[in-house]
Image (cartoon, rainbow over all chains, first blue to last red; front, side, top):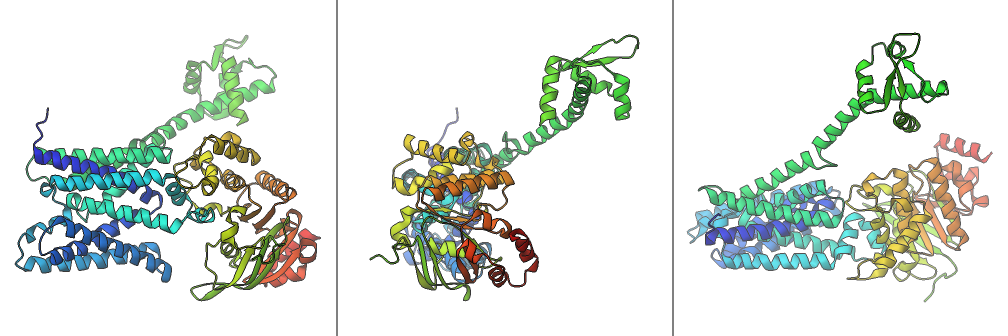
Length: 368
Length: 252
């Protein structure tokens, strides 16, 4: 049994809460094809953090996170404005806003580093996260935001679903689509804010995208996808926190992201219907079956032509049809119980006839 | 106050522009109730924009629109919309029945989840388009024609008086096309008004009884027999001779 000290428990709990929130909200972002919005919002939080630091005159979490939320919201607004009022496409608008805000953030960060502020060293921890700095009060804040996010998703479930699937049609139903979209974006911004301390602005977007992308591979419904994304997020958070606690000098945030990415890789490879390996296996099976099906169908057509389901067909005749002796394929068909060997006077050569099951199987294949 | 209450759709002086270039210019359009109307015109004629303006999805630069005498905002419940099939991501994780039930979300109101009654309504609508056996199917596994019929069922479940459909026959096979046309004619026989963006000049005269010819401006409108003339088509399509020759052939 792992002996968990107080700091590790705090970090692990925070990481699990972050994983749940970002998994749930990230699912909607990914389905709305707005994965990059999270990337932009998290990078855009940096100037807000720095301004919060300068205005508050120190590293107090409240002002820092408020600054992050405000500059993230401003960035989201700018993106929306660019898309509506200019000819920029969404990706270009996101890219421009991301880089400008991040550049301003880095400028402010270096400016602060050259001032003689107390505790300035802690600020660049927001770039990649600094889990060890987490306090129980921070975890309590994360818990409240997680509860708020889950409650909003439950309350507006069918509206969020409709808007994510078909916003234009949702407008025609009378749903306040713009307000719902703003609410979803705001919730993503909130999730980012609570993730900043743990994962940092650079990697936070991965927490929104990775659990949702992994969950999509395994599920068929929105409900199961959101639930599984929350679980994947929580597992990644827990794994990252525990692994980083197992040795000195392992950063928690990046480890959480690596854990989530491993889940994505495993899901892309292994998921039963959408995974690459199962698909390759199905293709391999189909390729192997093709000659069998071909021979079965030819036997069936010969049987039909002779108006006798059990008509014996000489192996040599098939060999001349294909240009090689199909003995191996015939053996496979025999093992499956679809054909049986029989002797046919006066020739000595091997003969084959369809069994009843083989006749039915061939008829079905031929009819397709 | 009622304005032109005897018309299913009344559009006056409608102008819509994208980036200060007009896509619809000074449209006056009157569609009487109970017709099966086609909106026809070349690519870029503004057909989709016209439908989206009626639904308030694009903001007009000028003009007004009424449905059965009142603004769309007041008449929303009377309108069923079938968007272009390609306008959504069909890989969304949901089932056929779920998509059809979305047609009832507006009537359900906040906080209420669709229940047994809504399921039954959705199943009835699916049966109308011949898709009742696909209720539990993932939408990602549907063919193009099946996707189109799911969108139709989603609008049918709204039990609207006026249906606006954007290219419901685009990319569907001949059997599905016939099934959809039969359905549209059934709707008309129930007294509903159906307005359809259509792209095939060869079939338009046999499928529809009311024609709107559009090319940024309104070229002609009225009963099919009066409006479907070579002269009108030439004015709508300009130099696209090949298309016109096909249409002439179809008319002969």
